[in-house]
Structure formats: C-alpha cells, structure tokens
Image (cartoon, rainbow, N blue to C red; front, side, top):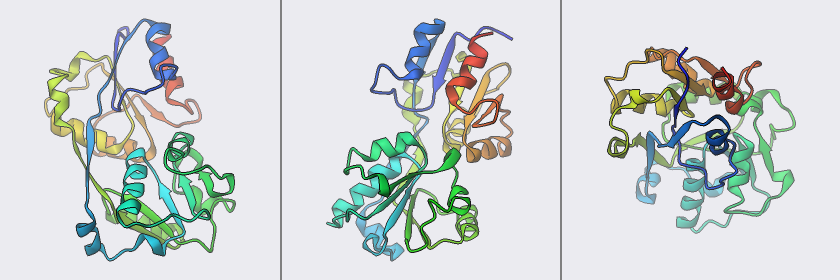
Length: 249
C-alpha cells in the first residue's frame, strides 16, 4: 500500500485548531484539505406552507446534521415561533448537541444523543423514546426509505423538508483532479452522490475511502464505490481511529 500523503475531508475546515482532524497534519506529516462536496439551499416559508406542517405543533425535534440545526432555527425565527424550554432535542452526535447551543441554552433533560448516530436508538432506548412527544424531523429528502424507517420506529414523528442538498460544484475551482488524494473521508451519503456527479471520471484504484455512517455505506455500495473502512464499527468506533490505522502503516 502506498504511503498516505494527502487527505480530503468532505466537510468545512473546523474552526478549532485543536480539532483532531487538523492535528493529524503535524502528527503524521500529511497534507489535509477540507472541501465540502455538498451545500444546502434554503426552502422558504412560502414553499413550506405547501407541506401543511406547523412546527408549533411539535414538542421535540430530531437533528441529524448541522445543516438541519441551522434550518430548524431559521424557520422557527421566520415563523416567529418561540421555542419553549421544555422542547426536546434528539441529536445524531455530541458534536450536533454542542452545536445546538449556538442557538439555545443547554438543558440536560432536553438533550439526548443517539447511540452510534442511528435513529434505531429511538426504538431501542427507552430513556430517549419519550412516548408523549411529537417529533419533527428536518431533512432535505423525504424518501420512501425514510418514511419506512419512521414507521418502524413506532413513534409520533413527521419529516419536514426544510432545505435542499445539492452538489457543491465550487469545489472544482479548488480541486482539479480528485485522484490526487490518497484518502477520501465522507461524512454523508450525499457526499457519495455528489462525488459521482462532480467527478464522474473518478476511479478509486488505490485511493483509501472512509465512509462515516450507515446510510453513507449503503449508498457507497449502491454506487459501486468500495469503502476501505466503515465507521462506526467494533474495530473503528471513531473516524480518527480509522484514519490513523492507515497513517501508522
């Protein structure tokens, strides 16, 4: 296996210089670029009204990304909806939980983090599944798979399309040839779809591909993109662990 010299993370550069992703640069003497392969486009209130959903009817929200967080609070502001202190936030990760505090005060009883970032935790974890709550699930795509998943959870949950996720073609101004990277790290299944659209001639060859999240791994397989490490897993519960597995070689 060739030595890893250059890594692309499909997300914005962390603002904290102490981020473990940034620290990999000096620790292993590698070049690291942060370029999102996707971007979001807002859906405005006039279009939301066609969905016939009022966010004031809900008592909890499931937030699976920072984009979902931003758009949830944006719409609440546009609707002039004052979010009550009792509102419950179900978060995909600790990072999402921390990010929400940009908009609202942290209350431990109102914040819950999903195990392994999976919605299945709502079904299996009685500490999280609050029977009396009506859940709102902000998303960019209300697919048959998502509706089936919600039905399987057996909770009172309604998905709402608050934004659109589209390929970030601006990356072409910064990356002329994605094959120049020895490792690609994807955080969303939309990253996989965007890769295929923005760089249709991409050939994996000996490029290491790391996919974070179950949905990301599913779409990678559907698009016939072989992943070298699937995270989280018993062997690699964190992205950093998976990356270092190769950098140490």
